[in-house]
Length: 332
Image (cartoon, rainbow, N blue to C red; front, side, top):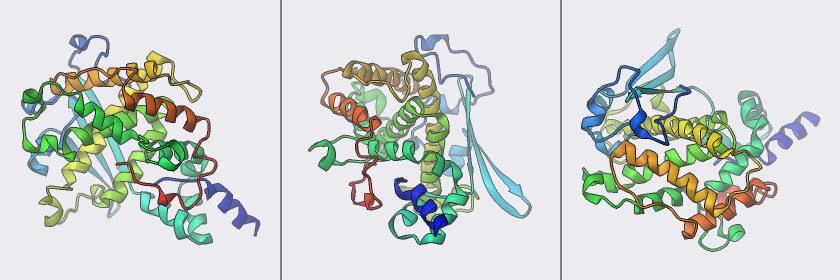
């Protein structure tokens, strides 16, 4: 009985739904190439961060990004995705492990053995359950707690897309304006940057990995069906791009954590948040050679999100978040 109570206690509030910078934030012109990088990304109008909408096939993606499947015995259980651009390199390693579906199943309807399996299978998740809960709340809309018009990470990405003021330079393909274009790229980079700045790179990486394992477990093996390879809406390319953009987001997050001295106790004023978002936008402008209007402290999304993040870091929506948290509306 004590073991059962311990497992439930651990899971009661569990709710998941290269040290070099991407570039010199203060002066992108100071970038210097140090790794062997392909010119393909530049020809596609991308440096560093990637747009899934610019690739027409997995083969084209592999001409730019290195994918290596590691074999242990007869089992492929790890994929390494490496991207080198303008002298900077990031590598995403996705291994077999728990997925978002495992967590939500245990949260919503799992029995004791399911709970115990999650505790044993992911001690990191259990040890960091409070931080993961905070990220969950920041990533989801909950107007019941934060008021009508509540905002999440996705709204920051959508607002950034609306800041693009050089449409002719930005939208090189029809898909660039879809959710698989700038919206998805900005969403992954900004969310991972915030999670890294406010918590840690390890937590950001964990969250990104459990999501991708759930979204497409075949990413680890490379054994895709013809239907998956030809699915324009959700192809392996889209998910591999997410893995790379997660890494770039983490690099940006580490830089900005130092620049703004961010930790879990930081009070986010609208001025701080707008400055933070504008630093991320400087990365977008450099990566895609586009123009963007700056965020201001008066922007509604800035005011709302700064208020939300302060409340969440103090525990709002976290300590009282029950196992029925799947009732929340899903932020992308």
